[in-house]
Image (tube, rainbow, N blue to C red; front, side):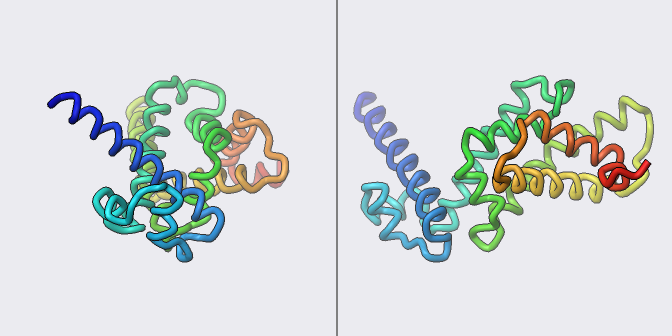
Length: 196
């Protein structure tokens, strides 16, 4: 009985992985709205019934793609010493952008009525709020602006930096881009514009 369960689990994992890959490929080729369940099933080499059993809707499948990616990025954040390293967490995120640009492209393009971008930005904000609170504790200060506003702006800025990185003809190395974004955040727009 255990062997049958293991074989079934492997088939389920394979089917879900194939459907995720099909979603990413088809959305990049056609855009989310043009992707059909039939096309997803055909590309993944599964039946429509298998699609509906695992995900139920296209939106659920796209959410699963985003959540899997965001979970991997969050784990990479935790596994690295990103906060104290050159470029910080943004460097880690940009390194992921270089390794898995297709999923991030779908996210930052706003496919699926922007739901993946909002979901991903919210996941980034979850990490940033912890960092912000840690910094406040370390400095022994109170925020000068509403905490949720600070975190929302920074999360959106990071998502924008990732989009720029993915769309740039010749982006710089992740650490250089991350350092530039972090400097803009710390020193402001006037500094970025070259004002003394």
